[in-house]
Image 1: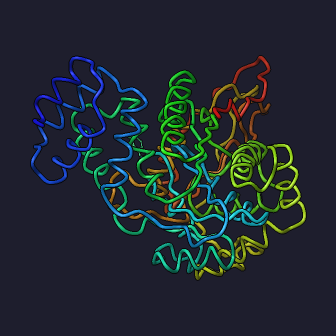
Image 2: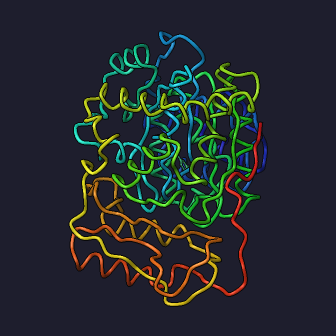
Image 3: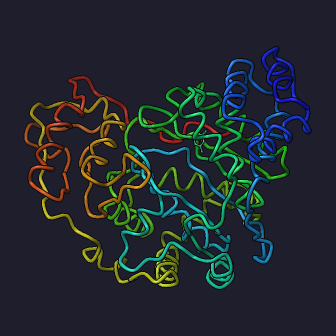
Amino acid sequence: MRAVDLIDKKRRGLALQKEEIQALMDGYLAGEIPDYQMSAFLMAVCWRGMNTEEMANLTRAMAASGDSLDLTEIPGVKVDKHSTGGVGDKTTLVLAPLLAAIGVPVAKMSGRGLGHTGGTIDKLEAIPGFQTSLSGQAFVQQVKSIGVAVAGQTGDLAPADKRLYALRDVTATVESIPLIASSIMSKKLASGADAIVLDVKVGDGAFMKTADDARRLARTMVEIGNHAGRNTVAVLSSMEEPLGYAVGNALEVREAILTLANQGPTDLTEVCLALAAEMAVLAGAADDVDAARTRLVRALEDGSALAKLRAFITAQGGDASVVDEPQKLPQAAVIREMTATRAGCIAALPALSVGEAAMRLGAGRSTKDEAVDPAVGIVLRAKVGDTVSVGDVLLEVHAASEADAQACMEALRDVFVIQDAPVAKPQHVLGYIR
Ligand code: URA
């Protein structure tokens, strides 16, 4: 089987067989197929697309290219969650202890942030002492004993995806739904879960800017997951404005604690409950989403979700007293407020601008190897649909220096779009693909 023939077949819009896709992946990983041929293949996929069968085969081949996590020792149905990334997205910090509190095992591998989107591992590491690198054995043991573990990736999951992604990045072939969907799903398959819930973000701060594109990506990933024998559901959620009020690692941990104490922002609580209910149903912990929601809301109200957070932090070496004394989390040296210079109703608060400003403060990284500052970030004090008067505080900047704070305020001076006419509060959960 020659690579050139497979490229030609895809270029002519024909579907590749399982063995052909496997041969391309094997040849590429073995160094027998050079980058220029793989680039041509990727470009052909961008133009011609792939059918479900091809995408499932590509996903499986990438998932099988490296290590995979074996979660079979953990009793019960293990459900993973994946977010396509956004600003202020601290849902994993809430979902992991919340689901464990109702008896759903959570064994989650998470990543670090890049660009304007944050990463769960950076957020967890804002908790003093919290260890995110666990051996496979310690990870499984912790889930067996307390029902939850969240760690940075161990082993080499889906190395074919890593190599292909780097190539796509420099050949203008990232923006292809079959390639994005198979890339994401290959890592999910290798992570060992029995079922998968996808949080596909839509809007200004998301990878997918329109509901149509997000729905297409979500549907494709659901098809791939189901084809690979993993029950998969997608929730579409809004990323027009940041999720919740806090953007920045320690600030987001604080907001997650409040949410687990049932005092969180409405949008964050709503998105977390929607995702958690889907996960609980897939795990068999409830017959339907309404029954799941009832159990989850009870865990927020009766303190059991917060208690599970304490146990989770302690198990991973962190200082669980931050749950009751959040002032022990890293604090920024400088906190400055930005106030409204006109009255009215907030019509827009673009998530991307807020995420980029937080990244420049040091809450995120622009290249893979940069360190983050756990203390810095932005706390919004008003969101879309709120009415403000002149002088009301719109946001707080938590910075490492006065100069950083001033630069951030300057960058965000016009980020709140304020108008005279009233604006309805937006919807946060936009749809489901089951
Ligand atoms: N995230 C991924 O993991 N892969 C893609 O291709 C795009 C976003």
